Length: 318
Image 1 (cartoon, rainbow, N blue to C red):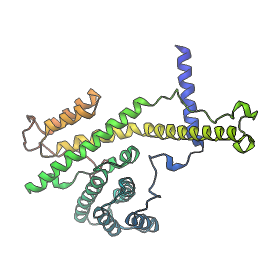
Image 2 (cartoon, one colour; image 1 turned 135 degrees about the vertical axis):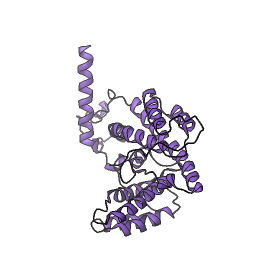
Image 3 (cartoon, rainbow, N blue to C red; image 1 turned 180 degrees about the vertical axis):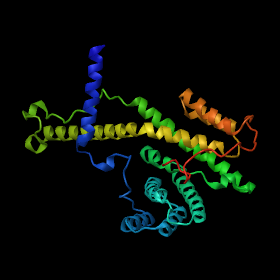
Image 4 (cartoon, rainbow, N blue to C red; image 1 turned 120 degrees about the vertical axis):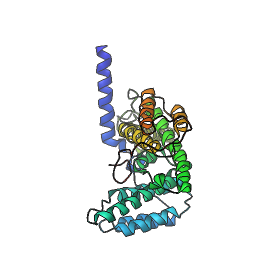
Protein backbone atom coordinates (compact mmCIF):
# COMPACT_ATOMS: atom_id res chain seq x y z
CA UNK A 1 0.00 0.00 0.00
CA UNK A 2 2.79 2.41 0.92
CA UNK A 3 4.62 1.59 -2.32
CA UNK A 4 1.48 2.26 -4.38
CA UNK A 5 1.09 5.69 -2.80
CA UNK A 6 4.70 6.53 -3.52
CA UNK A 7 4.27 5.46 -7.16
CA UNK A 8 1.11 7.59 -7.55
CA UNK A 9 2.88 10.66 -6.15
CA UNK A 10 5.86 10.03 -8.42
CA UNK A 11 3.64 9.66 -11.53
CA UNK A 12 1.81 12.89 -10.71
CA UNK A 13 5.14 14.69 -10.33
CA UNK A 14 6.29 13.38 -13.71
CA UNK A 15 3.05 14.54 -15.37
CA UNK A 16 3.41 18.05 -13.98
CA UNK A 17 7.04 18.18 -15.06
CA UNK A 18 6.20 17.00 -18.57
CA UNK A 19 3.40 19.54 -18.94
CA UNK A 20 5.71 22.31 -17.75
CA UNK A 21 8.37 21.29 -20.27
CA UNK A 22 5.72 20.92 -22.97
CA UNK A 23 7.49 18.00 -24.74
CA UNK A 24 8.35 20.52 -27.43
CA UNK A 25 4.68 20.78 -28.44
CA UNK A 26 3.39 24.10 -29.68
CA UNK A 27 0.73 26.04 -27.82
CA UNK A 28 -1.86 25.44 -30.56
CA UNK A 29 -1.86 21.72 -29.69
CA UNK A 30 -3.68 22.55 -26.47
CA UNK A 31 -7.30 23.50 -27.03
CA UNK A 32 -7.97 25.21 -23.72
CA UNK A 33 -6.73 28.79 -23.81
CA UNK A 34 -5.84 28.85 -27.50
CA UNK A 35 -6.75 31.82 -29.66
CA UNK A 36 -8.02 31.73 -33.22
CA UNK A 37 -4.87 32.66 -35.14
CA UNK A 38 -5.38 30.25 -38.04
CA UNK A 39 -8.78 31.33 -39.36
CA UNK A 40 -9.10 31.46 -43.17
CA UNK A 41 -12.63 32.89 -43.33
CA UNK A 42 -12.42 36.55 -44.55
CA UNK A 43 -15.03 37.77 -42.04
CA UNK A 44 -13.31 36.02 -39.13
CA UNK A 45 -9.93 37.35 -40.25
CA UNK A 46 -11.41 40.86 -40.33
CA UNK A 47 -12.94 40.50 -36.85
CA UNK A 48 -9.71 39.07 -35.39
CA UNK A 49 -7.78 41.95 -36.97
CA UNK A 50 -10.16 44.51 -35.47
CA UNK A 51 -9.85 42.91 -32.04
CA UNK A 52 -6.05 42.83 -32.26
CA UNK A 53 -5.53 46.31 -33.70
CA UNK A 54 -7.94 47.87 -31.20
CA UNK A 55 -6.57 45.93 -28.23
CA UNK A 56 -6.27 49.01 -26.02
CA UNK A 57 -8.83 51.32 -27.62
CA UNK A 58 -11.82 49.13 -28.48
CA UNK A 59 -15.05 50.48 -27.01
CA UNK A 60 -18.61 49.29 -26.51
CA UNK A 61 -19.77 50.62 -29.88
CA UNK A 62 -17.02 48.64 -31.60
CA UNK A 63 -18.01 45.48 -29.71
CA UNK A 64 -21.68 45.87 -30.65
CA UNK A 65 -20.72 46.21 -34.32
CA UNK A 66 -18.37 43.21 -34.16
CA UNK A 67 -20.98 41.06 -32.40
CA UNK A 68 -23.58 41.99 -35.01
CA UNK A 69 -21.14 41.10 -37.80
CA UNK A 70 -20.53 37.67 -36.27
CA UNK A 71 -24.22 36.95 -35.64
CA UNK A 72 -25.05 37.70 -39.28
CA UNK A 73 -22.23 35.53 -40.61
CA UNK A 74 -22.80 31.92 -41.63
CA UNK A 75 -19.33 30.46 -41.11
CA UNK A 76 -18.38 27.19 -42.76
CA UNK A 77 -15.73 26.29 -40.19
CA UNK A 78 -17.55 26.11 -36.85
CA UNK A 79 -14.34 25.69 -34.88
CA UNK A 80 -12.82 28.92 -36.24
CA UNK A 81 -16.12 30.72 -35.71
CA UNK A 82 -16.42 29.51 -32.10
CA UNK A 83 -12.83 30.54 -31.30
CA UNK A 84 -13.50 34.04 -32.67
CA UNK A 85 -16.76 34.29 -30.70
CA UNK A 86 -14.83 33.24 -27.59
CA UNK A 87 -12.35 36.11 -27.92
CA UNK A 88 -15.15 38.63 -28.57
CA UNK A 89 -17.18 37.27 -25.63
CA UNK A 90 -14.22 37.80 -23.31
CA UNK A 91 -14.13 41.48 -24.25
CA UNK A 92 -17.90 41.90 -23.98
CA UNK A 93 -17.96 40.22 -20.56
CA UNK A 94 -15.21 42.55 -19.30
CA UNK A 95 -17.33 45.67 -19.93
CA UNK A 96 -18.65 47.09 -16.62
CA UNK A 97 -20.23 50.45 -17.68
CA UNK A 98 -19.27 52.05 -14.34
CA UNK A 99 -18.79 55.46 -15.94
CA UNK A 100 -22.36 55.47 -17.28
CA UNK A 101 -25.39 56.79 -15.31
CA UNK A 102 -27.18 54.15 -13.23
CA UNK A 103 -30.26 53.97 -15.45
CA UNK A 104 -28.13 53.64 -18.55
CA UNK A 105 -26.08 50.90 -16.87
CA UNK A 106 -29.23 48.76 -16.55
CA UNK A 107 -29.96 49.14 -20.25
CA UNK A 108 -26.38 48.40 -21.25
CA UNK A 109 -26.17 45.33 -19.00
CA UNK A 110 -29.39 43.99 -20.54
CA UNK A 111 -27.89 44.53 -23.99
CA UNK A 112 -24.71 42.80 -22.84
CA UNK A 113 -26.66 39.75 -21.64
CA UNK A 114 -28.54 39.62 -24.92
CA UNK A 115 -25.33 39.81 -26.97
CA UNK A 116 -23.59 37.09 -24.95
CA UNK A 117 -26.67 34.89 -25.13
CA UNK A 118 -26.99 35.20 -28.91
CA UNK A 119 -23.26 34.92 -29.63
CA UNK A 120 -22.65 31.81 -27.53
CA UNK A 121 -25.83 30.22 -28.86
CA UNK A 122 -24.71 30.77 -32.47
CA UNK A 123 -21.23 29.38 -31.72
CA UNK A 124 -22.26 26.28 -29.77
CA UNK A 125 -25.21 25.09 -31.83
CA UNK A 126 -24.44 22.31 -34.28
CA UNK A 127 -21.35 20.15 -34.50
CA UNK A 128 -17.71 20.81 -35.26
CA UNK A 129 -16.61 22.67 -32.12
CA UNK A 130 -13.82 21.02 -30.11
CA UNK A 131 -14.25 20.07 -26.47
CA UNK A 132 -11.64 22.59 -25.28
CA UNK A 133 -13.37 25.53 -26.98
CA UNK A 134 -16.78 24.44 -25.68
CA UNK A 135 -15.32 24.28 -22.16
CA UNK A 136 -14.10 27.87 -22.46
CA UNK A 137 -17.16 29.26 -24.19
CA UNK A 138 -19.89 27.84 -21.93
CA UNK A 139 -18.98 30.08 -18.92
CA UNK A 140 -19.82 33.09 -21.13
CA UNK A 141 -23.35 31.87 -21.78
CA UNK A 142 -25.80 34.47 -20.50
CA UNK A 143 -29.50 34.20 -19.74
CA UNK A 144 -31.38 36.63 -21.97
CA UNK A 145 -33.99 38.92 -20.42
CA UNK A 146 -36.44 37.55 -23.00
CA UNK A 147 -37.01 34.72 -20.52
CA UNK A 148 -38.96 37.23 -18.40
CA UNK A 149 -40.58 39.07 -21.33
CA UNK A 150 -44.24 40.01 -21.23
CA UNK A 151 -44.56 38.73 -24.81
CA UNK A 152 -45.53 35.08 -25.09
CA UNK A 153 -43.58 34.57 -28.34
CA UNK A 154 -40.38 35.82 -26.67
CA UNK A 155 -40.79 33.41 -23.77
CA UNK A 156 -41.57 30.51 -26.11
CA UNK A 157 -38.50 31.26 -28.22
CA UNK A 158 -36.36 31.45 -25.07
CA UNK A 159 -37.74 28.10 -23.88
CA UNK A 160 -36.90 26.44 -27.21
CA UNK A 161 -33.41 27.95 -27.32
CA UNK A 162 -32.81 26.96 -23.69
CA UNK A 163 -33.69 23.34 -24.41
CA UNK A 164 -31.30 23.21 -27.37
CA UNK A 165 -28.52 25.04 -25.53
CA UNK A 166 -28.79 22.82 -22.45
CA UNK A 167 -28.36 19.74 -24.66
CA UNK A 168 -25.04 21.20 -25.87
CA UNK A 169 -23.99 22.28 -22.37
CA UNK A 170 -24.80 18.96 -20.72
CA UNK A 171 -23.36 16.96 -23.60
CA UNK A 172 -20.13 18.86 -23.00
CA UNK A 173 -20.44 17.99 -19.28
CA UNK A 174 -20.68 14.32 -20.23
CA UNK A 175 -17.69 14.55 -22.60
CA UNK A 176 -15.55 16.24 -19.94
CA UNK A 177 -16.60 13.65 -17.37
CA UNK A 178 -15.58 10.84 -19.74
CA UNK A 179 -12.23 12.56 -20.32
CA UNK A 180 -11.56 12.91 -16.59
CA UNK A 181 -12.37 9.26 -15.96
CA UNK A 182 -10.25 8.04 -18.89
CA UNK A 183 -7.02 9.92 -18.21
CA UNK A 184 -4.41 7.55 -16.80
CA UNK A 185 -1.63 9.54 -15.14
CA UNK A 186 0.34 6.34 -14.58
CA UNK A 187 0.71 5.92 -18.35
CA UNK A 188 2.82 9.01 -19.04
CA UNK A 189 4.80 9.33 -22.30
CA UNK A 190 8.56 9.12 -21.96
CA UNK A 191 10.64 12.30 -22.18
CA UNK A 192 12.15 11.20 -25.49
CA UNK A 193 12.55 8.28 -27.89
CA UNK A 194 15.72 6.25 -27.85
CA UNK A 195 17.45 5.57 -31.19
CA UNK A 196 17.24 2.03 -32.60
CA UNK A 197 19.70 -0.31 -30.90
CA UNK A 198 21.20 -1.21 -34.28
CA UNK A 199 22.23 2.43 -34.83
CA UNK A 200 24.66 2.35 -31.87
CA UNK A 201 23.75 5.94 -30.93
CA UNK A 202 23.45 7.35 -27.40
CA UNK A 203 20.10 8.72 -26.19
CA UNK A 204 19.56 12.16 -27.65
CA UNK A 205 21.11 11.26 -31.00
CA UNK A 206 19.32 12.74 -34.03
CA UNK A 207 18.07 10.83 -37.11
CA UNK A 208 20.56 12.59 -39.41
CA UNK A 209 23.34 10.85 -37.46
CA UNK A 210 22.16 7.47 -38.80
CA UNK A 211 23.60 6.48 -42.17
CA UNK A 212 21.33 3.50 -42.83
CA UNK A 213 18.18 4.96 -44.52
CA UNK A 214 15.89 2.21 -43.16
CA UNK A 215 17.07 2.71 -39.57
CA UNK A 216 16.88 6.49 -39.99
CA UNK A 217 13.28 6.23 -41.25
CA UNK A 218 12.38 3.88 -38.37
CA UNK A 219 13.74 6.41 -35.86
CA UNK A 220 11.98 9.36 -37.53
CA UNK A 221 8.63 7.51 -37.47
CA UNK A 222 9.12 6.65 -33.79
CA UNK A 223 9.79 10.32 -32.96
CA UNK A 224 6.64 11.43 -34.82
CA UNK A 225 4.49 8.86 -32.99
CA UNK A 226 5.97 9.93 -29.65
CA UNK A 227 5.33 13.64 -30.31
CA UNK A 228 1.71 12.95 -31.26
CA UNK A 229 1.13 10.84 -28.14
CA UNK A 230 2.81 13.42 -25.89
CA UNK A 231 0.80 16.30 -27.40
CA UNK A 232 -2.45 14.34 -27.00
CA UNK A 233 -1.66 13.51 -23.37
CA UNK A 234 -0.78 17.13 -22.65
CA UNK A 235 -4.02 18.36 -24.25
CA UNK A 236 -6.12 15.98 -22.16
CA UNK A 237 -4.21 16.75 -18.97
CA UNK A 238 -4.74 20.50 -19.36
CA UNK A 239 -8.47 19.97 -19.93
CA UNK A 240 -8.74 17.72 -16.89
CA UNK A 241 -7.09 20.47 -14.81
CA UNK A 242 -9.77 22.89 -16.05
CA UNK A 243 -12.63 20.45 -15.41
CA UNK A 244 -13.31 21.34 -11.76
CA UNK A 245 -14.13 24.99 -12.49
CA UNK A 246 -16.04 23.93 -15.62
CA UNK A 247 -18.30 21.58 -13.63
CA UNK A 248 -18.99 24.28 -11.02
CA UNK A 249 -19.91 26.92 -13.60
CA UNK A 250 -21.98 24.53 -15.70
CA UNK A 251 -24.02 23.31 -12.75
CA UNK A 252 -24.85 26.91 -11.85
CA UNK A 253 -25.76 27.73 -15.47
CA UNK A 254 -28.15 24.78 -15.77
CA UNK A 255 -29.77 25.58 -12.44
CA UNK A 256 -30.28 29.28 -13.23
CA UNK A 257 -31.61 28.56 -16.71
CA UNK A 258 -34.36 26.27 -15.45
CA UNK A 259 -35.26 28.62 -12.61
CA UNK A 260 -36.54 30.94 -15.35
CA UNK A 261 -39.91 30.38 -17.07
CA UNK A 262 -41.25 28.37 -18.72
CA UNK A 263 -41.25 25.70 -16.03
CA UNK A 264 -39.95 22.45 -17.53
CA UNK A 265 -39.20 20.17 -14.58
CA UNK A 266 -39.71 17.04 -16.66
CA UNK A 267 -37.44 18.26 -19.44
CA UNK A 268 -34.67 19.06 -16.96
CA UNK A 269 -34.96 15.67 -15.25
CA UNK A 270 -34.74 13.89 -18.60
CA UNK A 271 -31.64 15.84 -19.66
CA UNK A 272 -29.88 15.30 -16.34
CA UNK A 273 -30.60 11.57 -16.44
CA UNK A 274 -29.25 11.41 -20.00
CA UNK A 275 -26.04 13.39 -19.56
CA UNK A 276 -25.02 13.54 -15.88
CA UNK A 277 -23.81 10.38 -14.14
CA UNK A 278 -23.33 11.92 -10.70
CA UNK A 279 -26.56 11.44 -8.73
CA UNK A 280 -25.59 14.03 -6.12
CA UNK A 281 -25.25 16.67 -8.86
CA UNK A 282 -28.61 15.75 -10.41
CA UNK A 283 -30.33 15.89 -7.02
CA UNK A 284 -28.71 19.22 -6.12
CA UNK A 285 -29.77 20.88 -9.38
CA UNK A 286 -33.33 19.55 -9.13
CA UNK A 287 -33.63 20.65 -5.51
CA UNK A 288 -32.59 24.23 -6.33
CA UNK A 289 -34.81 24.45 -9.41
CA UNK A 290 -37.85 23.15 -7.52
CA UNK A 291 -37.38 25.94 -4.97
CA UNK A 292 -38.15 28.42 -7.74
CA UNK A 293 -41.25 26.45 -8.72
CA UNK A 294 -42.92 25.37 -5.44
CA UNK A 295 -45.52 22.69 -6.03
CA UNK A 296 -44.64 22.38 -9.73
CA UNK A 297 -45.33 19.12 -11.48
CA UNK A 298 -43.45 17.78 -14.47
CA UNK A 299 -45.21 19.81 -17.16
CA UNK A 300 -46.95 22.43 -15.05
CA UNK A 301 -46.07 26.08 -15.66
CA UNK A 302 -46.50 28.47 -12.76
CA UNK A 303 -45.10 31.85 -11.81
CA UNK A 304 -41.63 31.51 -10.18
CA UNK A 305 -41.36 32.49 -6.54
CA UNK A 306 -38.46 34.87 -7.05
CA UNK A 307 -35.49 35.89 -9.15
CA UNK A 308 -32.50 33.52 -8.82
CA UNK A 309 -29.21 35.00 -7.72
CA UNK A 310 -26.47 35.49 -10.28
CA UNK A 311 -23.94 37.84 -11.77
CA UNK A 312 -25.01 41.28 -12.91
CA UNK A 313 -24.13 40.66 -16.55
CA UNK A 314 -26.07 37.40 -16.61
CA UNK A 315 -23.11 35.30 -17.67
CA UNK A 316 -21.55 32.58 -15.56
CA UNK A 317 -18.09 34.12 -15.94
CA UNK A 318 -17.46 36.32 -12.89
